[in-house]
Image 1: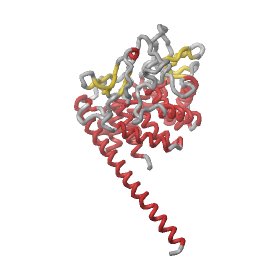
Image 2: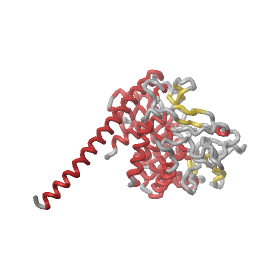
Image 3: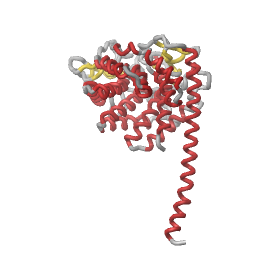
Image 4: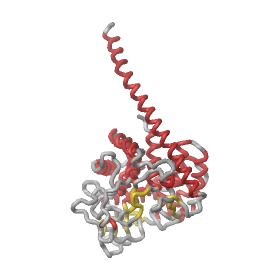
Length: 414
C-alpha cells in the first residue's frame, strides 16, 4: 500500500467513529424533543379543558395555593403568553388544531391594540399576534401590531429617552413616589417596535427602540454588567433620580429574571441593529449570569439572597423570607436567548450552556409530572417574593420560553 492510500485508510477509520457519534447524538436530541413536545401537548390539552373558551378574563398565569389554575384578564402583562404557547405548539407539531386554538386566543386580545396603560404591550401582543403573523399570516394582523406599537410609543418621552414602564413606583424603603419609573424588563418590548418599523416603513419605531436601548445601556448596568431593576427618571432634567428594585432581594442586588430580560433584550437589539455595542452588552450580561449559577444552571431567584451587604427594604416580604429558591422562569428565558446569542457571539460555550439548561428544565427536578401542575409545564418559578406573590409556583411565561428554547434547539444545526 502506498503512502497516499495509507493516509486515506487512516482518515476513513478516524472519521467513522465521529459519524456514528454524531448520529447517536442526533437520535438522542430527536427523542428528547419528541418526548417534551408530547408532554407539552398533553399538559396544554389538560389546561384547555380547565380554562374553556377565551372570555377576556381567563388567561392562564399560575396556580393558587391549593394547586388550582389561576387566571387573569387581558390587561395583565402575562395575557399574551398563553396564546404564544399555543402558537409554539403549532410550530412544534404542525397540527392544525393548535393553530385554531392559537388564533382563537390571539384575536381575543385585539382590544389591547389601543391600550396605553402599560409598557408590556410587547409581551401581550407580539407573543400572540407576532407569532400569529409569522406562522399563519392573515390580513389585519400587521395593522394590529402597528397600532399596538403606536400605543407603546405614547409612553416614550424624548426628554428622558426611555419608554415609561409603570405609571408610578415607590421603593420598599422610601416614601417618595416616583412618576417615571423604567424597569429592565422594558427591553423585551422593543422587538415589536423594530418589527413595526420594518412592516410599516416608518423609522420612528426603530428610532424610539434604539433611544430606549441606549438609555438602558447607559443607566441600568453596573460596572460588572449586573443590572438594576427599577430606575426613576426626572422628567424635567432626564436625570436618574434613584435606582431600586421591585421584585429583587434588595436595591443593590441582581434579580435573576431582570438579568435574563437584559440578556434577551440586548440580543434582540443587536439582531435588529447589528450595532456591536448591544452585542457586547448581551455578552457581558450573559457572562455575569453564567458565572453565578449553581451546577445545574437553573438560577436562584436573586444572585445575592442572604449575602452580606444586601438588605431588603423594610416593607419587602424578602426581609423575612430569605430562602434561596430557584427560578425556572429566568432559566427558561436565558436558555432561549443563548440559542440565539451563541450564533452572534461565535461562542460554542453558549450553545453548550443552553442545551444543559434545557435538559435541566426538562428533568423531573423542574418539569411537572404529567397531569399535574394545573397543566403548566415547569415547576419552581418565582414571581415576586417582595410582594409575597407566586412563590415557588408555575408561571405561564416560563412555559412560553421553555417551548421557544425547545424550538431553537430543534433548529440548531449541530
